[in-house]
Amino acid sequence: MSCTKSSRLASRHTSPQENQGLRLLEQALEESNRAGIATFVMRGREHPVALKAEKGLLAVHTLHWSDEIRDPHQEIPDLPKSGKASAGELKMAHQLIDALAIDWQPEDYRDVYQEKVAVLIEAKQAGETVEKAEPAPKATGAVGLMECRGQQAQLSCPGGSCPRRRLVNA
Image 1 (cartoon, rainbow, N blue to C red):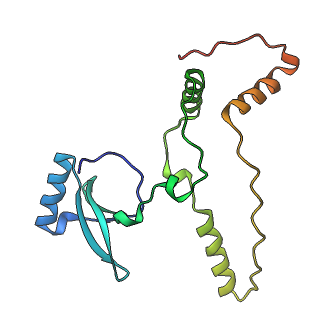
Image 2: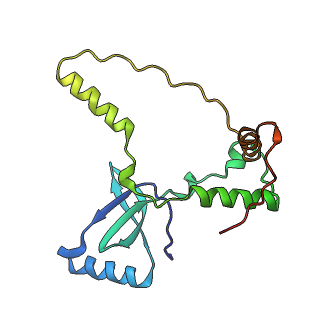
C-alpha cells in the first residue's frame, strides 16, 4: 500500500532500535514509502492495522474490517445528492480556506473532556460532592457559505454604500 498523509483512527508506536528485524522493516518501509497491512490483538479482539514508518518509529494504525465500512447514502436514505458548486462559489471557498489556513500546532489544542474528567477525579479523591453536569446547549443550525458572505457584506457596508470589490490572489 502506498503511503499518503491521512487521518487515522488510532495509533501506536514502537521503537525498532532494540530489534534488528523491526529496524530493517522500518527502514525499508520508509525508503519505499509503503505501509504493511497486518492484524493484531487488542482487548481480546483481532484488528486490522497499517504498519508505517514515521520518523524512525514503527506506527501501527488501526483500520476497519470491510464489513464495518458502509456507504452513507445506503445507511441514511434522505442524504442530499452531491452537486457541483459554481466556479465563483468554489473560488470563494478556496480563498476563505487560504485566508484561514495556519500551520497546525498540536500543542495549541487541548482535550477539554479529559481536563474535566481529571477535575472530577481530583474532587472525588478530596471527598467533595460531584454535581451532575448541565446538558449541552442545543444546536443552532448550520449557515451556508453564500449566506455568510451576504451577511458579512451587509455588516461591513451598511446600506450598501461600499464600492464593489474584486477578489484577487496575491
